[in-house]
Image 1 (cartoon, rainbow, N blue to C red):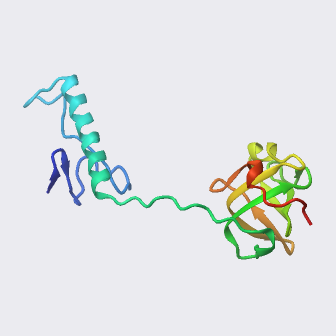
Image 2 (image 1 turned 135 degrees about the horizontal axis):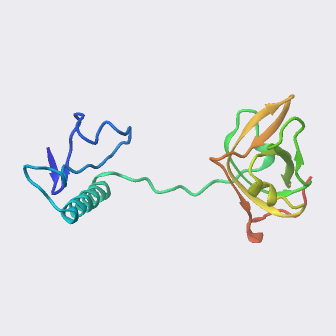
Image 3 (image 1 turned 120 degrees about the vertical axis):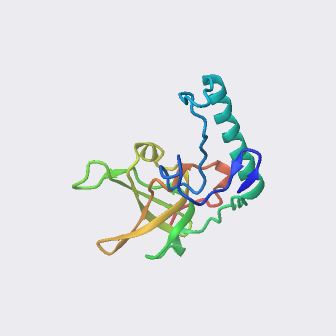
Length: 174
């Protein structure tokens, strides 16, 4: 069925639909090598552009996008073995060290005014931020137990960035 000019809403498999598992996909039915109704390369390009533009218009009009929520930051003392989605502002307490038996995994101790926690880092960019005394903003980290101790894991789904000085609301780390 025609949703709007340039957008046909089809649940059935067809040309261009079986290639992806995406929620939304676009395709054109314009073939420059067709003998029955030949079209130029320019006509084919314009048809494809019209299809993509119509698809975006459809998404903007009909798909509800939830605005991002502001992160809620917590304190180290509230972390437990089942914590995930952890957001913290911490200061680096000790320089990163390589974990024995791993070339890529490093650990660094950071904390706030309520306690300290060991972070597991794999990214060299994250490790480079860890200078003793510097403030770090951590978002969407999760816990993992290692030999009975909590490790806060920073992975590809986490943010680990230098914190603005005004976001640090504590003086000393216990």
